[in-house]
Amino acid sequence: MSSYASLQTTFNDRDCLVEALVEMGYSREHIEVHDTAQGLYGYHGDLRQQKANVIVRRQHVGGASNDIGWEKQSDGTYTQHISDYDSHKHNAKWLTGLKASYTQKRFEKEAQRQGLKFISREKINGKTIVKYLKVGA
Image (tube, rainbow, N blue to C red; front, side, top):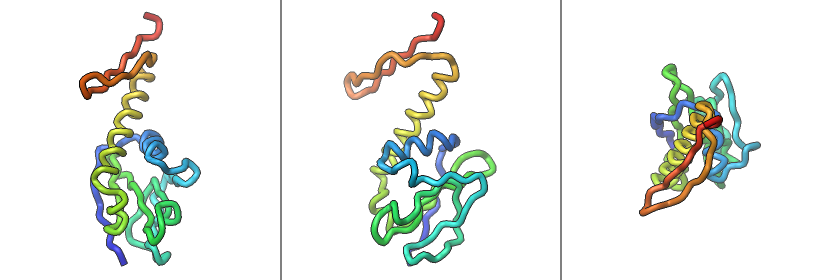
């Protein structure tokens, strides 16, 4: 049985987290979203003590995998629960990609909330430059 590791994240927007998971290759219909945290299951189908509000079930993670999930905390952030086994596939590089995708989604959502319209995105000298225009300006 592979044990779970829990990692506190700065993620605090469930929709942006789901969109980031989709960008990282998970199909939207394979991502469960729950208002009340649900139990996670190990690769043998055994119910674990960890619970999560955003879940990718083991059959969608890969062969012999466990569920992976993100549990909403009282401060609004999410703690990620991932097994030692699955941390090989979802390693530091994958987590960095998830964080980058989440950050981009969160930024875009906030820009839209502020009435900004996306104009362009380009890489210059290794930095991503994003241009927005204030709607009505």
